[in-house]
Image (cartoon, rainbow, N blue to C red; front, side):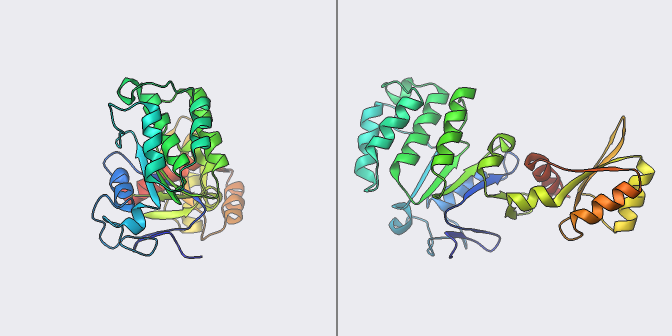
Length: 271
């Protein structure tokens, strides 16, 4: 199956939810705007074409986020009518359903709180019916209850191609299929990242022995009150090899969560 978004560094396959991560200033918003056809994009292609100012791309793509505001003087109903006029795939019933679930009042956009504006962006993106949905930190300002609504909606929309820039990896990890790390331009399936990145803790000398035996350089090394902690990339070595070597050296090895794996791989990209 052909990728929807391609560049020399990565390819985003259709029907999956892709996370885009990186520190502030790493270019997450810029990348989404390039995909959406709002900025020049070098060798990036979307639907097999250069996206910039290209209706063949922009008619099938929507970008929403707190930095992509809607019209301040318009109320919610008028914004939804705009959506209906803009996209032939607009789903009015879905928009009205989501307005109720997010408990979004029928006010002017300018009178909405930050979280309510985020919710409105999510509603517009989902109800548009666009094949490619780009969400730039869409949860900003949402309280815990409304973030859960957002995650439920993501689950319901699985099968569309969704690209989300995020700092909330732990909350989102169960909804992402792949992660694109802008530090070092690494891209991989979430399952591979979690299964292949391991944390090993124990006495510093034994940690050194493990690294020497396996001939690996840690992605991250920290000193704690209980000894040293290293994070290693075990994809090439095989996780079982790391677990067995750690056990023989009286070290404890364990899998890490997605956020920890991405942090370690990001540190490697900055090295």
